[in-house]
Length: 394
Ligand code: NZQ
Ligand code: ZN
Image (spheres, rainbow, N blue to C red):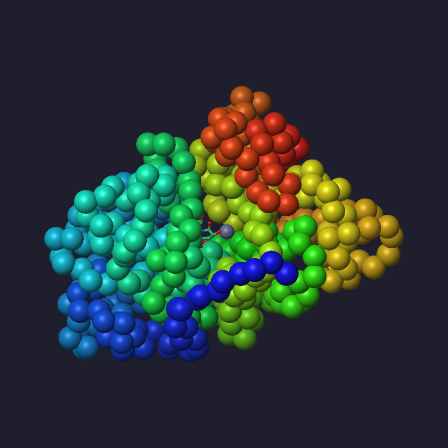
């Protein structure tokens, strides 16, 4: 087990009607002037935003509301929102929505606390983040895990770059998790969220670090639990118990616990971010479209690790480590397909890509060949291209 430090200070309030506690939580964490962000309108249609506004009004909190966050959230929106939050005098940012809204709220908190710095400079490393505003979350989509994660992912339209910023300042002060708020999700969005939850643990699971049994068992339990409840919740969106399992696993999957004591890989995320930066590809779908190609390209580095995954999560217990590894990869892809998720680039709305488009993706992910990504098998430009090529079929 490698050394680690783990500090996840987010207060989690879970359960039916949990959002009714939002105003009390805002007060508890020092909010006086709350800047609320939301997405394209699902929280208006569900009545959630109106309920939160009522609760804040009753508590005597001043607030300003801004909607319009799009999936794969944009830097330009954040810059505009920073100006508005500064004018309003915000001292707290409240996200009501999914990962894109939460990441926008985090970026907005950083930008508002540091008005003299362009917020993108924190993402590029030009500026170091030393302070921010507190962020609260009312979660509507189990997926990104941003409600407790130390990361925020933003897309710069100018740079055509989608990047994550790791920082302890990204951990929200509180997160309200009511599984009922996710009942209104469409099946494709719910499936994409489930895939993202699986990937947050899988991208930590494939490792060369030995002897980390508790973290391994936790990861395997989480993966099995998501695989078990995914078909149930997709068949019955309003199954509270099944949605509870998915939502809680979504949070635990990305808070850090399922990877403690070993290095993180996250290659497939980086490869997927390039797709989203170029084609606005849905995040979860970008991962399932590429994971199989990545896994087949790297499993021979440590077949016994993939074999363990195949055995513990999919019950594959016969054959050589290589055979079990390949069976585990196949079963994962079959599972994705059973959720109607893409398992190749050709399955995405963009379809099979021309070779020069694959080269542009490989350039994007490796900054023109100047860096490698991932830890399990460091991926340089040539290897990234190989993975995109392997995924580029119908
Ligand atoms: O915008 P609205 O109208 O709210 O609709 C959204 C959006 O269209 C809809 N939706 C959300 N909750 C709903 C709902 N529709 C009906 N009922 C509900 N209850 O779902 C659509 C997608 O929303 P989005 O927030 O984009 O999805 P998700 O939560 O999957 O977040 C994806 C973003 O998070 C980033 C991704 O890269 C992507 O940009 N990630 C952030 C991470 C982090 N900060 O730690 C880690 C992840 O790996 C991920 O990279
Ligand atoms: Zn993800």
